[in-house]
Length: 102
Image (cartoon, rainbow, N blue to C red):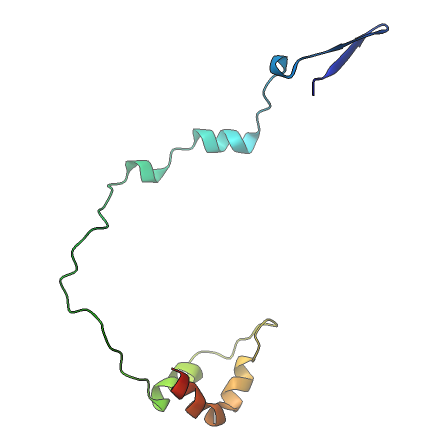
């Protein structure tokens, strides 16, 4: 609604259209920011692919899966369902199943 002003006992309401538009610092920054994208050359997404399409993947071997799991450091988060150090400890038991799933 409008904003009330008082003079003595008289209360006069200002119409919302008479009130100044609030300006926010962050909004000014957004309005005045020039996007680097506007100066970029637009590239077409309709580029013809002229290579051999990938239609089949070879299954991963147990050695490849083992290397992928063992090589990275054993960092974990509380959100990990299975901590990395534990996965590495039981890897030889899980490796056949993981390989089948890949």
